[in-house]
Image (cartoon, rainbow, N blue to C red; front, top):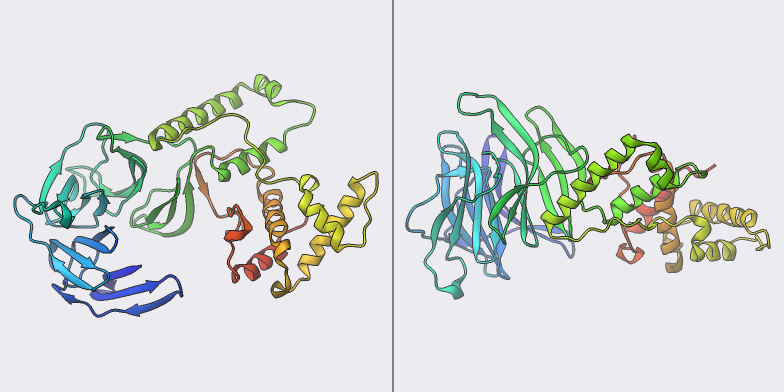
Length: 419
C-alpha cells in the first residue's frame, strides 16, 4: 500500500511511504523522475499490474490539475502531458480507474465552488498508443449533487457513490453533508438512486469506503462538527451478515404461532416487511445480484444441533451421553465452555478452533441480537454498549491468523453465558 502526501497541521506533505502487508512494516521511499509537489486532498487509483495514477489536490496556495503516473517497481514518477480541454483544478474529488479510463468526479474547485462534473482521462495504457486527453461526460439519470469528500467504489458493472460535502445551493453558503447512495451503471451509462430499506449511517464526508467481494465497508468520516469512528457494511439481503440477524429475529417468535399467522395478524409488520423487500430487491438489481427471499438458513447453528461442537464437549468432559440427551448435552456444553475460559491460547489445538469460533458467534447472537428486529442493508459492526467483536463475520476458522487466536479467546471469555 503506497501513501503520498497529505497534511500535518498547516504543512502539506510530499513524502512517499509503502506498507508491506506481508510483514506489516512501513518504509519511507526515495523516488525519482518528475516528483509531484507536496499536496493534500489529491486522488489516486491503481491500474495495470504496477502503476498508480494521481490527479489534482491542494498545495496550500492553489488548486492543482496535474496528472502523475508512478511505476511502483522502478519508483519513477512521470508527469503526464495532456492536451485539449482540461477539467478545472480541484481537490477532494474521487479518481477511479475503470478499464482503460480514469474517471474523476466532483471536488472543490478553483475559487472554492463545489463541483459536480464527471471527466474521463484516456491515454494511460501504453499498449493502446492513445494520446492523453480529457473528455467531460454528461450522463442521464438521477445524478449526484455537486460534492467533495465523497467516495466511489467499483463493484461489477456498477460504481457506488456514497456521502460527501456540498452546499445548500447557489445563494446558500451553509454546508450540507450527504448520506445518499448513487449508482453509476456502466452498461446503460446512467446514474441511479439506490434506496436502502433501513436507516443509513449519518451524513458524512472524508470517510473511507471499500468494496470487499459483494460487500461495501464504510469507516469514519466528518460531518462538520464530529469525527466518526464507526464501521458499517452495505450488503444485499442474502448476505450471511443479514441472514444471521433475520434468523435470530425469527427464533424469538412465540412458538404457538407460525410466521404466516403472525403476518396475517399484523398489517403494520407486513407493510414494514414489504417495504424492506422492495428496497432489497432494488439494491440487488442495482448491484447486479440475484436475491432470493426464501426463508434464510441458520448461519448461527444452535448448540444442540452442532454435532462437532457436541462431540468435542463430550470428549473433553467426564459427562457420559444418556438416552434423555438434552440434560447431559447441557452439562457437557458447560464443561467445554469452562474449558475454553480457562485455556491458554497457545495450547488450543486446531480441531477446537471451528467449534470455538461458532460458539463465539452463537454467544454474541444470544447476547446482542436475540430481541432485535431484522436488519436491512446497512449493518453497523458495533454492538450495543460494547466494542465491535472483530471475528463475528468470519465464515471459516481457516481465515484466522495465529495471532488472532489470543484475541478471539479474550473476546470469548468476556461474553456472558446463557442462563
